[in-house]
Each structure stands twice: as structure tokens, then as C-alpha cells.
Image (cartoon, each protein chain N blue to C red):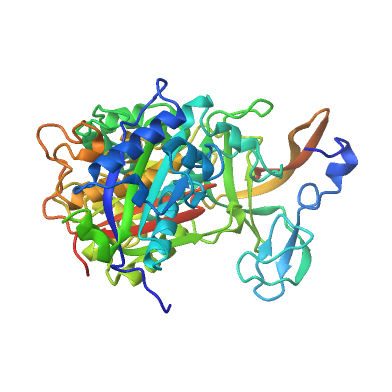
Length: 140
Length: 403
């Protein structure tokens, strides 16, 4: 990417650290990640309210990828998450052992399980690490 | 719509090469071979100068229509390169049909070609292309499609064994097809024991990385008798997209682009799911094919697992699917696949899939049993779906009779 690999560049991206979504004024859909000239993916609307997407939600569906690219630790679960405030995002897992997979009782990752989003390193824009959100089962 | 495609365009020839790891053939070698096979397949013969226009489909092959012109000796005519992820082959065919149906061209060539093995690793590198937001980074195809499998299992009680039965079926038929990439049978146990790629998708739930090429020639329906007495008519076509970003999608137990494309194609063709005698469906992953049984209307929502348990997708069942071997066994050279499915439909609808049709370049397309030929096939459907998971889908419906 022909952009400066320094921390402020990444910190200022609204769709990374700040979890800002754009809620469509016409149909209420939360479009994420936001863009400067956003058009609603569902209805084509062009007017939005900025919303801070909540960090708690439930797993809608997931997969468990057994191998990850260099720089990321595998196995990891990839999930589509419906947040408690009505947004839908996807994220990778952290802080759990996803390879104990299955739909039987007692496995760490299941559809409908409650999860929370936490800030983690996603990758490196040499030499700068950049951060984003991963999800983990809510520890109670 | 004020103009309909139905019955206006006919497929008069189809050519295919053997799919596989074709290290001994270049991109150009494969494309030329498929094209020459296609010319041979025209029953009453054709002069290449009669081709008025061409559409060239490839996802990762060299860009511009002039590549096809160079490789196939087709100078001076309009050639357009089409790309639409895994729907490329079908969409290339669809666009050629528009032009011929509109009466702009009499005869058109559709060619698809993909050399996947020149880049070791297949599509893996794509997982790190594009904007590096945290949500889609490192997302591979097995993951992007697998999420649909997981949700389907959760809501409808589908199990991995149902996915496995689909891989078994496609290998069962692929073994009978000398053009297939893989030609051996597998068992449900082997599929379930295979290494996991992206749960619930294991190694044998995923289609291979394949090289291949295919070509088809179409003409306006008034002109078919010059070329053949058994043309195959295009009844309907559909295409639909949904957002790339998985978080923007609304449904994870259906692959909505296929549902929408099917609605369009059925409406245009004035047919319904019950009229479809057989189908070539895009089983990039076993969960994709299973969900397509519902999306295409072959069974009700949620009942795919019963459809599979009752073997309704075998010849003899309600809707035979992928008796070519499908993507899983026959192979998936991305831009070629849709065109190859049209060729399979062409052979099946002309009752040639049990033997050695001319478009196969001297090879038989079935083992001596001939069991791959579907008896009394009249209407066939082919479907592609792909992108970041099921992002774009294209469907074409063909028949050996005008309807």
C-alpha cells in the first residue's frame, strides 16, 4: 500500500480502532466499515448517522480455519457476529482454543454464543503493527 | 422487460479438454484445443470466418479480448473479455447470448480458459489483498463459504455427513468421466476423516485447483439448421450479486445471489424447479451444493439433508446434479467452469454424454457403461456462484426443444 506506515495513519481509520459504523437514516442498517462516500448496501441511501458499534454480541455463524497466513496464529475461528445494538460484523477469534470444534456441548465456539470484541494486533504494515478487533467468548 | 431471450439463441457446438494438472499445456494450448474441439463438434461443419463475435472469460488469465483473437486466429472481430469471479464462465455465455438474441450477430463464440497451476497456492494469496480491515483479512474461500455450512447445520440439523455424501456422489460420477480431474471414488468415512481445512469444510469438501478450457458456439435460432439438426436452446438466464463484506449480508442459510438469479432465469424461461431434469451446480464446496438444492427450488428450505439422504441428486432421483463429476471431481478452472457446464448440458440434452461426442477431441466422456447419460433429459440448468463466498451467481437454463 502506498501510504505512510506509521501509527497515526492506522489509528485514524474509523473502521479499525474506533468501530464506527454508519446507520442508514432510511432503513436503519448499520453499514460497516464506513467510507467517506457511503451508499447503504441494502437500500442505496446516502444519509447516515455515525454510531459506535457495541462490543458485545452473539455468534451468528463461524468457521474454524486450521491454518493462518504468516504473522497470524492458527487455528482461529472466523465468526459473523450480531452485536447487541443491532450491527453485524465479522472478526477472528482470540483467547480461546477454537480447534475443539463441533456442535456438541462444551465446545468453545458455537452459534448463538455470547462474545465480546477486544483490541488485538491484526497485522504489520512494515514496520508498524496495526490493530483491530477480534472476538472472544465472554468470560463469566 | 420488453425483450425476452427465451428460444432466440441456440448452442450448436461445444468443445472441452481433459481437466487436471496440465503442466504440459500452456494457457494458449488449452484454449486452442478447446476451440478446435468446438469447431469439430458442429454437426454440419462451420468455417471460422462465420464467427461474427467472441466472448472470452477468464479470471486470472491475460486481460483483453485481443488475447483470444491472437490465440485463436480470430482477427478483426469484436472480442470482449468478461470477468465475474466464479460466475465468469456463465456470465461470458450470457453476454454472448444477449448480443445474438438482439440480432446484432448471427454466430458467436464463447470461450473460457484458466491456468491455475502457474501460481502455486491457488487462490490463497487473495486472502491478503484489498483493504486491510480486521474483518475480512486472511479470509480464504473455504472460510467464506463454510460459514453458510455452519449456520445451516445449526438451524436445520444438517450434519457433516450430508456434505460428505455430496462429495461421494460427485466422485462416483467423476470416475465415469475421462475428462475429470479426479477419477476415483471416495467414501463418506474418507471425507469425514480427512484433514480439516476450515471446519466444517475438510479436504474432501473442497474442490481442487485445476487447469482447463472450454468453448461453445451459439447462433440465432433461425439459423440453426445450417449447422445442426439438434440445437440446444437457451430458455432463461439470471445473474445477481450481494455485498463482498460478509457483515453486510442478511442471510446465511441461503446463498441469496443464487436464489435471485434462479428467480430471474425461471421467470425468463417460463419454467419452474420441477421442470428441471438435471443440473450442473457450483460445488466449490460441498456445503455450497447442499444449499443450492434449496436455493434452486429442488427441495424446500431446510430439507436438503433429507433430499441427500434419499439420494434424489443421483440419476434416478428427482433432480440429478453434477453427473459430470461437478467441481469437486471434474475440476474448477475458475473462468472455464461455467462454459464447461454448458458443454455438459449440450451433450446431455443431445444424448451424447454416454459416448464420444466430437467436441471431446477423440476422448470418450463416459466410461463404457454409459451410465452418466441422463435418460430423456429435456431441460438442464447450470449455475455458478462465487467471489468472497457466495457473492455473485449466474444461472442459464437450456433445453433441447423450443418452449
